[in-house]
Amino acid sequence: MTKSFLSLQTIVMAACLLSFAPAHAQESSKIAFVSTERIFREAAPAKAAQAKLEAEFAKRDRELQDMAARLKAQSDKLDKDAAVLSDSDRAKRQRDLSDLDKEFQRKQREFREDLNQRRNEELAVVLERTNKVIRQIADAEKYDIVFQEAVYASKRIDITDKVLKELAK
Image 1 (cartoon, helix red, strand yellow):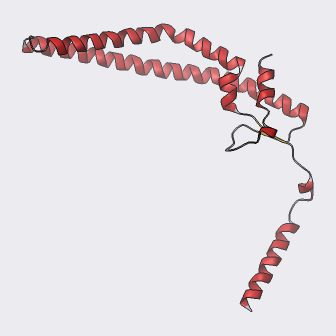
Image 2 (spheres, helix red, strand yellow):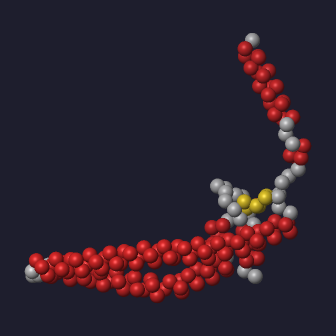
Image 3 (spheres, rainbow, N blue to C red):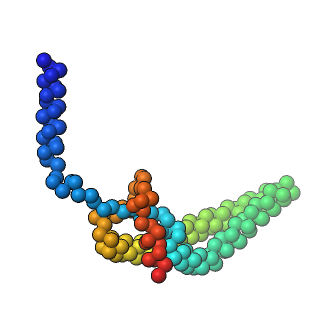
């Protein structure tokens, strides 16, 4: 009896759930997907932003590379000369090397922070423009929803190429 009661209860519950399903569920929704990763990698505005950032930060990057080379050269020289240096000379060089290393790390951290901030600013502009293009395509082609993040999206609903084409104009 309990088995048939549970079975009957399951059937009643399923019927209730089905009765609450919206009447328009039979209508198919038009959905699309855009790969933000591809937009940031392939879109003309994203490539222009990347080139702008590279030009803006090239001088500081070269300075950091030169400072790293100086640091390595001084470290190698200290290692080579350590046996023949007096204790006070060795300690002075180690302090100088430590000071240079601290300065290098500080400048490197500032460089990364500044670069990340500028990259975020530039990508925000690209994303804003991309979202505008996506809205235009969605309105023109009557999409109900456009996803920008998904674990999986079929090529059938992927409109990234259309967005890239519009961004290239």
